[in-house]
Image (cartoon, rainbow over all chains, first blue to last red; front, side, top):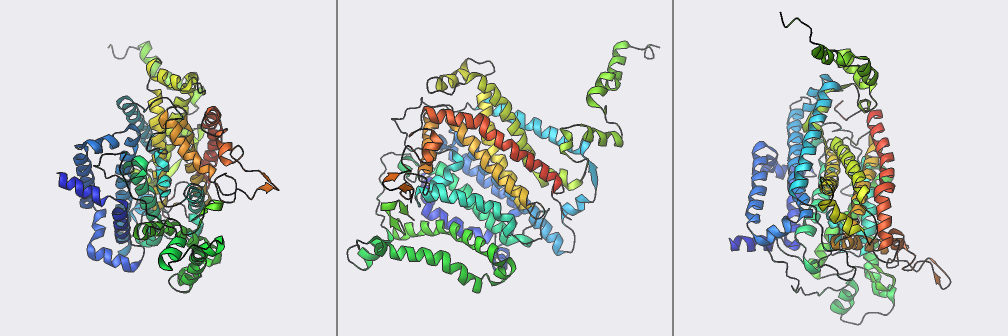
Length: 371
Length: 266
């Protein structure tokens, strides 16, 4: 028992869990035909069948059932405001399975030259009264009953009266913003709290204008839109849901990492040995003092950022994304690659932090400008 | 023959749907045939958000997940419970916390705050899942691109509604969550004191951006989460954001119909 708990505590550390999720993700939701072949060979698509669904859900239930026997796990999961996130985990897994199952079923039908299931259904027309109104009515009753039962069983949290002089440790934002708060580990507030949310909102509004694929409108499919779905699910499942779960359940006092079965010890010591890229280059690699001129000091980082956002889209347009570039045109392609590179910067920064203890690529604290 | 004898009470209820009063209110009466079933949709201001006829896939729960409709329903639940809560709650540092306690202990049927809070969490979840469904069915593709963007705005507004409401109980959970959240505003580039480029907005030696005049101050109505922030968040939560949200919801629902109803294979 203790050995299993210890094992789960160890592997749920972000620097193990995140790379594993990242690696698995692109095999489970292959964006390209090459990865799709591997997916088929490994039989990963079987997740989206009845048996796969049962397996997914039993794993989740067994994990939570087992977890609830542990005091530390119970304490954090049963916190009133965290209950919705547990519900969210189950709901997201269920609906992911439901949509992928229908997608794969339709793909199989389309491969046989048949119409998707929705098109078969759509041949029949029904009257909204009573066929839709009555479904809505039942949904409303179930939802109301659910809310009332929830409200009776679980009192809304109310802590001590507000006291500006006593700050709780950890201080957490509301749960739906914990993905952003988790990014604060790797980026400064002006990026994690202002730039990224703005870019996320802008990027989401851009989706219909970037995705020029006309196929797969109005029915579930995976193969006809595999690149779009893979990218979207990466944001939604990994960079949103997964980070929220990490931020809620696995971050304790001082925003230190704690495994799901670990006691939240406020005195846990984590060595901070992070260095900036400039310090890394001048002091560790070149073994000399930091230059006093800011621009000279941060030259490497600035060049790196310019190359990252300037050169990579251009190089990709000549190589891997060539057909994409021709199909999308300059405006769409630039927005798409910039958004993609921005989101990729989070995993990259994580990796740099874990592997080389890099704190900032560009560090100009004089102007609060740290990247 | 007792059965054939007219019972006035039975007659009354039998004829009620055809009565002058019922016809005056409902216009159509009980829909018994196809024509009446269509008319009832057209004759009601609420029902005519819907079309009269739909392809069958559009009413299947496994296709729609019901999430858009549920989001709207939960929004209505939040409006009703929110209005009830406003009767008791006073947004001042002095009274707020005590009023929240009274809501549970003194007010009859004291689960309104619970329903309101859990509905708020539920709405965030249903809106996210609605977005998820719309993406997975490719429903943002032409001609529905603009409505997706409106939906993104509604999603952001939902989270802002939830965020502003989070402060109102005025307990430790509330002020520190808002403190963490609003500290971000202070880091806004150019407009926040601790953001990059805050020194750019200056006239000679006079800085326009300082801790009593920046994005964070505008959000909180003060240098820290206090009386000003509570009032600001209360007004935004009860009037400001719902007002904006209603406008976007009207556009969203209107465009669902104008863009050809719920998406489907063509």
